[in-house]
Structure formats: C-alpha cells, structure tokens
Length: 322
Image 1 (cartoon, rainbow, N blue to C red):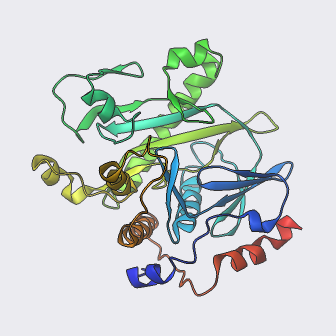
Image 2: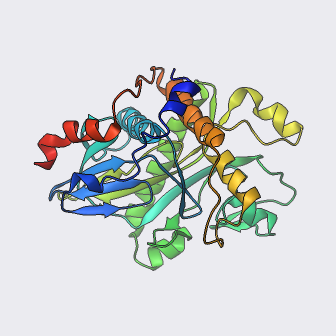
C-alpha cells in the first residue's frame, strides 16, 4: 500500500483541472471533467474533493481511486444491470456511452447518520420523522441502523439536489410509474450486492447513491459512479457496535471526517471563503481512500507517483483526443 510519505510527496501532483487538454465539448462538474465526443463521453475523475456543494481541497490519488473502484463495482454488478463503461484507458478516465440522464438520484440509506442539510440524521434531529415518505420512529440515536434500508430519492439540480418522494417523481413526470418500479428494484439489488461485498471485507456500506441513463437504443444503464467513497459512506465493521455503545462516531473510511472538520471550523454553506484544509487531513483522506480500495478489491493500489499525472493523461488519451 502507498505510504503517507508517498502521498505527502504527491501533494503537488494532483489533477485539479483538465482544461490543459484543449479539447472541445468540455464540461466541468464538481469532481469530474467531461468531454462530449458525440456518441461517447470521456469522463475524467479529478482529485477535487467536494462537499456542501463546494470544492474543499485536492486529494492526491483520489481520482484514481474513484475511477478504478467504480470500474470494480461496475464489473461486479453487471449481472444486475448493464452500465455505460466502454473502456478505461487511464486510471483517472472512463470512456462511457453517452446517455440521456434520468433526473433522479437513487439514494439508499441503511443508518441514521450524516452531517449535510439533506442527511437523515440532520432532518431527524430537527424533529422530522417523514423522510421521503418513510416514517421513522421516535427515540433513535445518531448512527443507529435503520430497521431496513430505505430509498430517499433526490431530484437532480444544477445548484443542489432536492429530496423528493416516489409519488412526486411520478406526478411530476420525471419517471413514469413502470420505470420507477423497475429502478426501485434495481437500486435495492445494487445496495444488497454492495452491502454483501463490503461486509465480507470488514466494512459497512452505510449509504450511497445511484444514477441511471438511457442510451440511444432505449436501454436503461447504470452511469456516473458506484459505491465510491465520494458517493457512499463506509464504516469499519469490527468497531461499529462498541463505538456506538460508547457514543462515539463510527470509524469511517470516507470523506465524512473532512466534512466534520469544515463544520467545526466554518459555515461551509454560508462563508464565502473557506479555510484551507490542513495537509495532515488531506494526506489522511488520501490514505483512507486507498485503504478502502484495497479492502474492497483485494488488490494493491500500485502507483508510485513518480510521473506527473498531466503528462500520463496526455499520453493515455492521445488516441481519444486527436
């Protein structure tokens, strides 16, 4: 596994932006840079770290972890639903089918947790018991396991996603009833597969989101990313029960601790200028992402970081960008 010393040496070598490629069809999202090539998309996962609808920092190797981990999960869920992946020419890059994006995120939750405004714990702590049509009982504790996983869909928006119920999704015409019922079933199947694989590797898949699109043949595909530490929350299984009993936060292996740091040092929703994330937190987050990759896949994360990521990207994408 890559050491923290190697990560520290690569603080300069983050992929923050890909506009240097000078290719048309460019769109910059929170973490991913996308290039529209007609029937296909070049999806480049950068090292930008987002939360609270903002960029908090750049994390060495993060883009590689997300892209390679998504590739692992796409392969291990292809029997449940087909996906958009065509080829992965670079650790940070996926060549995918261009799809019409279904404007709903399928957010699966198995625990009462979270720190953002839309999280179930924040809503619950404010007295809300009806979470997207799911009625939660009184008396629950932070980080407690729900009786069963729930689907809390969100309506996609350019600014920030909005919670929505199944009935509203159908009534507003975002998805027809038949497609909703199909994707509802798929989301639960994907979450069950993710939970199973995480569990046998010493992890708890706490929550996650899925996105779907429709290709030019009318087939619904799984798109974007799946079960990454950016789109999901993971806890260490071995220490969960004891830490819950002691009133401590679960031992997490995702970006939640960075979210909590910003919560403690500023108002990440309102402050115009955010504090700079300390190097030790950035290094720790990179280390956790790499550790998660290795735990889930059983493979060593092999990258010594001796070459600039931009030069590698230009070389590996030459055939697709010319």
